[in-house]
Length: 307
Image (cartoon, rainbow, N blue to C red; front, side, top):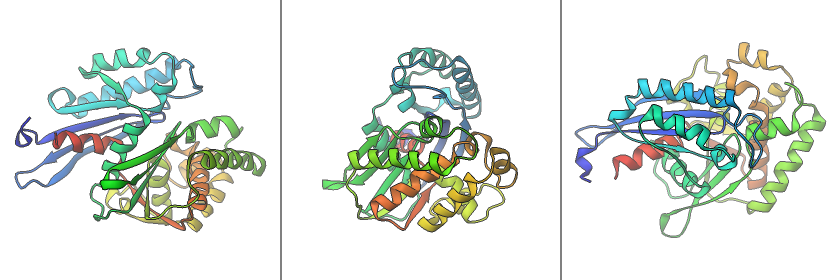
């Protein structure tokens, strides 16, 4: 296919907690711009265990988001790709979602494996960040977490773990305000997974993707409203991460929404996400990270433009 013929692309990421979509446009000078970007908290993996069944109400929320995306992004007339990740890898009934979603979108929803997910996420994460060859990309999702680094020849190499903010919250936290005992039990679980999947150090600059780091950036940098330009590429320290773990764990979901401006679909799982970040930074020997407002959806759209 001739590159010049593709000027607009759409990437759709159906995740365990969020459905996200972006539309990119390449102008006559070859520069790529983000035209639209939207995320919907749907909690598709609500209550899901490996081999389990998707809840009808969770499917309904996700399909409603798909409907909105299909209208806003003019999905059927764009060069587009829709993928699903850990949630549909986990369930025994993926067709319960992929069938209706295909009917709405007009194209299939692909269930990609963890390695492919990590590669596209890494490509998207560094878009519009300064060029360097030592980025390491951490993507904390609802049910899985991926870490990707540049390997030999510059290709992305990744590791995936069954660790996510939804799963950790549902497994360990019995209330809005997790106790110290619950947090320690969650930490033990995170540490066990890290030790089983990762080396205990990391060279290069860590970039974090997903709702937890972008929400944390908004809080740390005292933004009254979401500002993509300020979030993307912003720094967050380990000390700031630990501070907001303590603050968010000490208040209920209503307070997180009303006082701190968190989104309803993020507020209840935020402490678990920050706890994972805290443990990950300490384990990898990092005292800070860079936030990316991009991710899998952007990586998909970029690769379509480069087809």
